[in-house]
Length: 395
Picture (tube, rainbow, N blue to C red):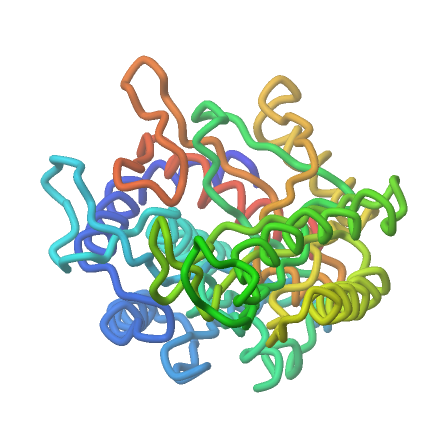
């Protein structure tokens, strides 16, 4: 079967590149992937693959049922579709035509790879049993996350998969390699929005003011004890404030308000909820003790992503069979987040990385940058590997 899959991956490589370049040139933001959805649905129609549109408006679920024998086993594959609000500076023929929008996280590669993977599986359906469910998912980059919406709409039912597999580009990894990590892999991500209120006035007369700048500086410092002194040291946790601003204020003016924004990340759902309460209580008590008042709001984001041990071990062995042991590396834990985590909380899941970097060609820019690109040779590997991993689980 490996020979057949690799042959089909080679056969469809040029089309995979063409699909990726079309999507790259016509990126759409989260939950606005109207034309992206239409384009992918038209391709599935051309390939004669059963599919259903309208998932979270623009998503698609495609099914390929093996014909070898009756089987209830189902494995799901996932590819996300949305782009980012970034202006591309790459000078390439397929540069983004949509001003201020760019496929800077490789979702164009994910969709192209998923499309060719399900096409390969459709070509081989006479040779396997079970069902592959291919999920083309909108809205990965924006809360509440397209995955959470699709789950509510029943994407993990009718038929229910025994596991789900996701693939993501990884510029630090050379093209031709993939990376996997069993167990805890990516962090949860919550957004923190704080408004510190006091009494503004002249900077030379602080006795007449409630200094919001001073209060906020104490708050930022004090909040770090949530991680350093309240978290179990064996549980990865990080708290970062990335934005601070005041309305008014100058070298000699104390503002009435200061706004603060940050992110809290961890890999334990129970501790995550506890930390939310600790942060709010600490902030409210501190600001009150210094004479101010506070609005404190935490917006829950994605949960942590766990790669189920047994599934990931099996898929790693399958990947070694397909690619060779020297091309399958072990990844470190990451404190970044992904809405694939919603699936991983409900069914056995494996989220792995596809090498897309090429230092010799200067393709090294990280994701979420305006110079991000991939070595398209990754599309010789991604589709076939996805197809093989799905079949390895079904069989």
